[in-house]
Image 1 (spheres, rainbow, N blue to C red):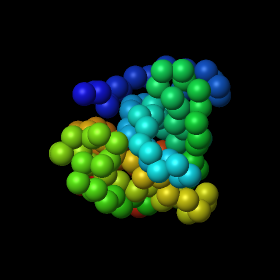
Image 2: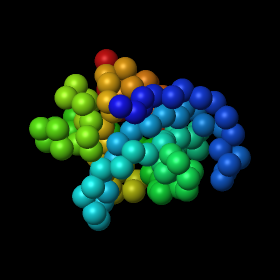
Image 3: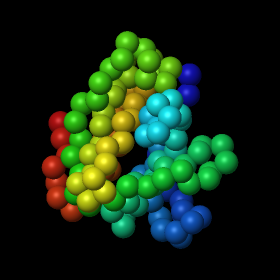
Image 4: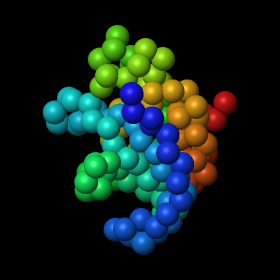
Length: 129
């Protein structure tokens, strides 16, 4: 299994911006509904950026200045090969008018993501409990 939480602080090669937090999650594609492991970077510029973890090619980003997070749907093991105890969540951006469906393999990975996301948003409507 892939360890999906790697907490590191280093310079982002494309923006020269130091991420507030980084890690891995599984993300469902918006066009092709397959699950891919993605490395994410939460940037202080209110941006969630995600990339291919092997090639570091940036696959997308989301404005996180005004987001909400809700519990995602668990599809009986269909969440990209994630383990049974995985945490699914939907990240909804009001500024980008879109939703990312993501899965974390463990509760601690999801908690760390939410704590950093809370720090990176302008409007604190992120559940941190």
